[in-house]
Amino acid sequence: MLKIETTKESNHITLHLIGEVDASNSVELDESIIALMEGGEKNILVDGTDLQYISSAGLGVFMSYIEDFQEKNISLVIYGLNERVYQVFRILGLDQLIIIKSNKEDALQEI
Amino acid sequence: MMKHELKLYCDTTRLTDLRVFLNDILRDTSLSDIEQHQVTLAVDEVCANLIIHSHGCNPQEYIQVEVEKQNGILKIEIKDQGEGFNIIEYKEPEITQVKKAKRKGGLGIILVKRIMDKIEFEKIGSQNTCRLFKNLKSK
Image 1 (cartoon, each protein chain N blue to C red):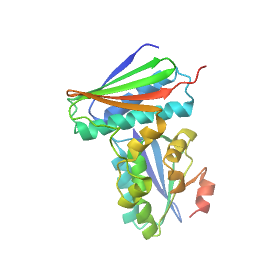
Image 2: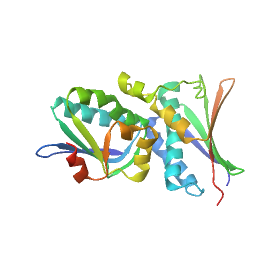
Image 3: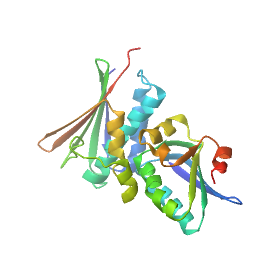
Image 4: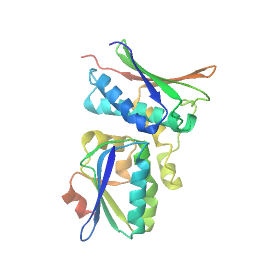
């Protein structure tokens, strides 16, 4: 099960991922990110505090927008990942391609 | 440890059942919390791949998953009928290629190969078997 909550704040928007992202629901994450891009958002925070699991389907969504973000000057920062989930990003070296911070305060410094 | 079996119907929403099944078994091994999570992920990746690409998400079809421990090695057998997916022969893309091509696939098999200690693939007639192995530390 995956629930995605979007919260708009003054200078950024937060996507709060709750639950598990796998092959059955990664399209929901994809659609959320597309919606933010279409809405002209420039600063996106992804709150991973309540993300219990992510498989390649979900990781692929983040990967697939890295270049679009660079072209459109969009910052995306993920924060709050638990150790198990963070290690999955690391296996693929995604921690080198995506900005990942341990908490919201640090994440806000990046935008 | 006895042999554990799960009949997984080819519907991606069933992957949750697969993970619950695996988590219950892996909890009783010497694998660390992080390793358990990763082995579950590797099996999820192989099965998701089969469900989507080999079985077209046809919920009438199924995959057989068997888990057992042999001589300090955890063995996971994933069996299905049909064309099959030869994970050994599959040439996974480079991570940078995945990024450039904006393709959302290919990452799963990279994860499986980096997480597991040994992988085998066997095809006998229409029966395909993918075996994933993880070395267990002695307690």
